[in-house]
Image (cartoon, rainbow, N blue to C red; front, side, top):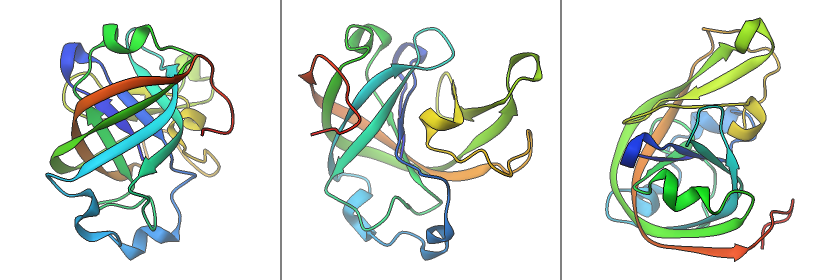
Length: 176
């Protein structure tokens, strides 16, 4: 699952996908739990993505708890309505976001070669500025992936944030 935001071209991806698995064939096993109008709470660590003023939320926990990370079109990702200034001060912090899903659409993550051909990068497509990050932060297993092939279909959930609060001034591997 990922989070992305539209304001000021800021994108925030939440890395929950531990590689796309055969679970994708199950489709949207959670029904209306992640449809337009549903309330969601997400908690994770704010980390910097590759482009200035873009962020990735890693180590994410999601409420309500889903049976899988899959949505209608593939793994769930969120595009949020916060700006870079809202998140920049939380870099390296564990935060909790609560809001309502305003739209659900089909999108994708593209696997691309890193700068100067070094390694792989993941470009998460959303409205506004796309997020470019490492496969690890995007929760994508790079094994067997080829640049400009193997795109990953995702379910993009636009999320209007009602509350953003810092849970911890640090990030840990175990998010409480």
